[in-house]
Image (tube, rainbow, N blue to C red; front, side, top):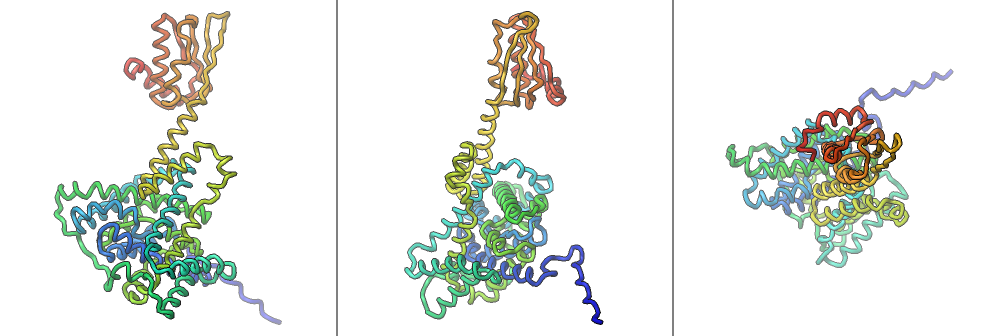
Amino acid sequence: MTAPAPARRAPRPGRPAWLASPKVLRTEVLAGLVVALALIPEAISFSIIAGVDPRVGLFASFTMAVSIAFLGGRPAMISAATGAVALVIAPLVREHGLDHLIAAVILAGVFQVVLGLLGVARLMRFIPRSVMVGFVNALAILIFTAQLPYLRDVPWVVYPMVAIGIAIMVLLPRATTVVPAPLVAIVLLTLAVVVSGLLVPDVGDQGALPETLPTLLFPDVPLTYETLRIIAPYALGVALVGLMESLMTAKLVDDITDTRSHKTREAWGQGAANVITGFFGGMGGCAMIGQTMINVRSGARTRLSTFLAGFFLLILVVGLGDVVAIIPMAALVAVMIMVSVGTFDWHSVRLNTLRRMPKSETTVMVVTVAVVVATHNLAIGVVVGVLVAALLFARRVAHLVQVEGTLEQGGAVRRYRVEGALFFASSNDLVYQFDYAEDPDEVVIDLSAAHVWDASTVAALDAITTKYAAKGKHATIVGLNEASAERYERLAGHLGGGH
């Protein structure tokens, strides 16, 4: 009699998924490698934008990725040196030099930790879907346009190479997903260049790669109020831009992977990673939408891929710099073009979607995209998008307030029934909805179907009762719910003569 096969041991509670499954481990490792390759030209380009040596951007990408793998709240998200941060700090580098930049990065990290602990991540609930769609579409456009400089004034053979790379990434997944298609495209195009001896732009043309490991350092700046005055505005800018990009990217990955991340931990984790990056001489950074999409689309779902992206980046640029330098830029451009295509929300621009979508929602999306593309600053675009959404919402809700008057008790009493949300946008016109001259001496304003949201509404109600009193008539406000009554009783008569 054959003994029964031993039962398969269940994974221990809390055991990482990549330890329990060789398939998951392979996916995480290969995804991390692809991301590391894609990080190199990006980090070099952002270093040039910031006006610093390429090593500063590469070291920042390494320390950010490795640190956030342990500290962050969104598994599989990639943080590294970014263009948004580079744009913020470029004037500081130009006017005061590298040491002030490093000090600003450290201070920005401190700001982010404080903001994270204060619960800034909760503000994400105030970002409408239309702004989120605009954010995603703008990112896709920026990722694509960032590749255009690598397609200008280049040998003609670059164009078919890019096309071949795109074809590989489109067709290979239909046959197999064992190896990430972007990695196959990079390897095959690099081998083709080496074997054929083609002279095309490569990674080595973008700048010198580091030959040593990053070391701890302290910025050589005086610890004075003057230094703080110089770096604080830039540090706050980096902190806000970094948090906004990181939290928006985390929300995007949440939606794609159908999982939920810890936004508060992500916020202070980004801050801690920036502090670490500053002490290692990096330029600071935040979540990278392009590389994150490469990672997630490659199947990565754990922190291991994030850690390995940073680890492989360091190995590649320090230990295998000569090999990395010969990777043709055409291969990386093809990867990023596919990332931009995959990032763009094509459903949002379909004709049937645009016909069904309220015009206000489409307007918010278009404004967000336009501002981000025009400024190359995601934070500005998102803030403007939220403001436009708030204004359009206030305008729409303001028109939902209705006032209906009826005569009671044989015409001796006029009752006004007010329906809707009363706040600054809707209550400013409320004062004109009453017939002060023709109404009888007794007026009842019934707010049982309304809600008082702010002081502007209380001031409007004060103005209404004052106008009736000036004509020798008495207006009574009734039907307030508990919250509205508390607000009205606290503020009524204390807002400057009823205004």
